[in-house]
Image (tube, rainbow, N blue to C red):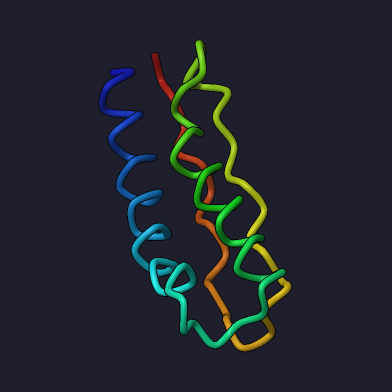
Length: 82
């Protein structure tokens, strides 16, 4: 059950990593501050599953420093019935 829970989170996490890939390109139409904010956000996404108790995972805050980027809010965290 834990692995299924983790897979559900990973699916959404990977979607947000894909949606923000372009923010790390040298010619991305965002400021250096926003680029750094998204770099941090993406690192938080990648490391969010590296915790002892996966049921305590939380979505990181979506950066707002690039007004031309609008990401959908995260869905609710899946519930764990373990």
